[in-house]
Amino acid sequence: MTSVKVPIAVDVAPIEPDAAEKRRRPRLSIAAVGKYLKDTPIRSLATLGRSGELAVNILKYTVSDTIALRLPLEEVATQMWKLLKVTALPALLMAVPIGAEVSVQVGGIMNQVGANSLAGAASGLGVVGQGAPMAAGLLMSGAAASAIASDLGARAIREEIEAIRVMGIDPVQRLVVPRFIAMVAIAPMLCIVIVAAGVAAGLVISANVNDVVPGSFWQSFGSFATPTDLVFSVLKSVIFAALVVLIASLRGLEAKGGPKGVANAVNASVVLSVFCIFMTNLVVSQIQMMFFPARLA
Image (tube, rainbow, N blue to C red; front, side, top):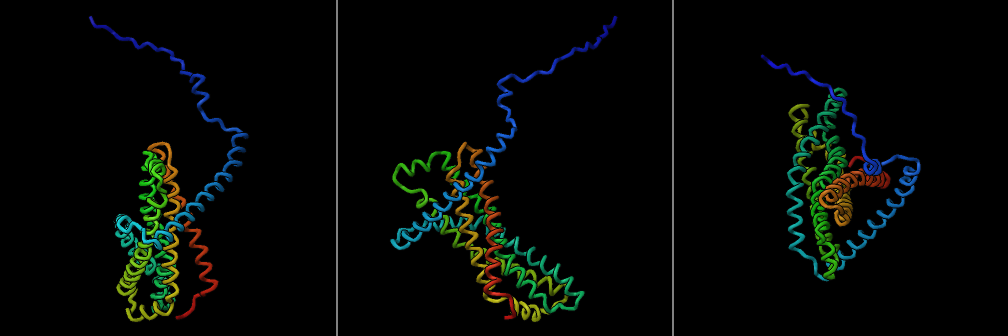
């Protein structure tokens, strides 16, 4: 004799969240939105004020320690090596497609209008003027900013920053200034590497794909890319480096809340660095066009 199992339907009432759970849920109301819109500009101005104060302290300690010969050169060299390890190879890998893309995109149009001899001008104006400093800035904001913010943020949540202050040492002088000097020192290197690799890639693509004579490429490149463009390109990279260190250091020193706070500091430093780099590039490029307009060399 076999037994037959009959399924029994049981009505299970949905579990209602208790009162404490309901209170923990965020409620969107007009008052909350109004408070957010009111507090956000105030917090933004406070952040700008702390950024300005940090920038002044960085410059003060950089100048005073340089004059007094108290710069920690060993720490600066260590930070330069760490930052170069995370930015040099990506800079080279990023420069090649930038130069190749400029040559491919512009070369097709120049073939149609019969102006192959101006392929070098495209590389000079595109890579030297805009591509190289922007690529260097984005690399520093992505790799270097995250490294600085994570290092300082980890020290902050372990209360090392407070311990340094208790010992009478300013963490800006001890931790931020060496990173600032290191970043400003490697920024021109990254820019020059990107310019050289990008222009070389553009030459190879133009000569082998668009049938451009190398001599014609270099002639047009030298006619349109002036030393002023290279100077402004390096200047942009130095300004971007200073902005990246300032933003990443501020976010790292103010990190709170354990590992989540460090992650938030890294994320904020990268996003804000990229935004500031694009805005600064726009301003500096406009100043260059106003006082040094493009013309044949």
